[in-house]
Length: 128
Image (tube, rainbow, N blue to C red; front, side):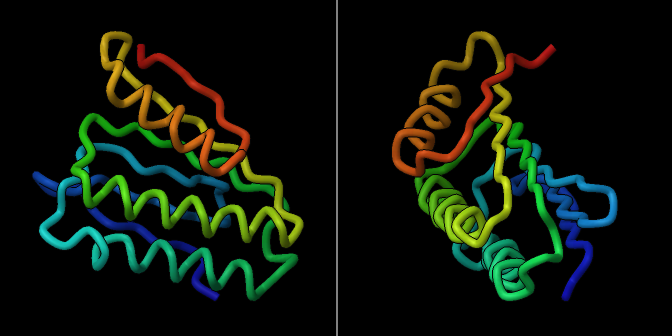
């Protein structure tokens, strides 16, 4: 089981840290990779491993702080969230913190749409 997954931020991809040891699960930045399916594949595989290794983690708080999502990224993030439903169904407490700028209605609405689709526990926070 991979304990830590970190993907460095680029000009068109977010910084990602999924770390079981520290309990840090963050996706931060802009998301418009050339191939979003390929970019998000390691995250989805990482969650698949968590689902397979029940008991590895009891709680997952994932913080999204995205400034921009391409349409293909919106689909890939939805696929990741659908995997988190499976993780929750396996007994893990899943909470999503969806951060957005005060004047960024598009990002806020995207998070609200994800909440409606997934029924996951979302907390919405305005960036400082």
